[in-house]
Amino acid sequence: MNNRFHGVFSLSLIFFSIIIALLAILSESLLMGLLYVAIILISPSIIFYFFCSKCACRLDSCGHIFPSKLSKLLLPRKQSNYTV
Image (cartoon, rainbow, N blue to C red; front, side, top):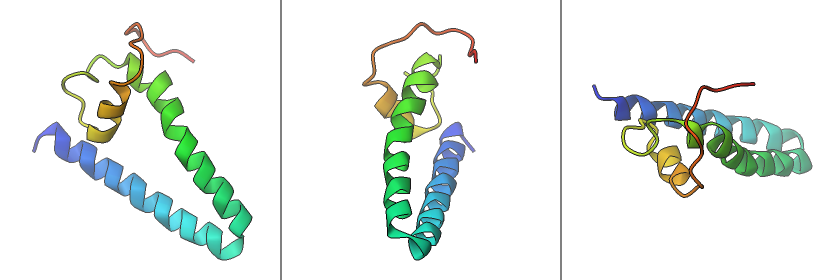
C-alpha cells in the first residue's frame, strides 16, 4: 500500500468522527452545535499554516491529499524542526 491510502483513510476517520460528534452535540444544543461547526471550519486553516506549511513533503509526497493541496496555497515558510 502506498502512503496515499493511509492519508485518505486517516482523513476519512477524522471526518466521520467529526460528523458523529456534531450529531451528538446537536442532539443536546443547537447553539453549541453551531459553535462546534465554526471551530471545525476555522481549525484546519490554523493547522495548515502552523504545521503543514513547514513540512518538507507538502509539495510533492504528502499522503494527506486535501491538506497538501490547501497548504500549497499558503505563503511558503522556512522548513525547519517543529517547536512549541
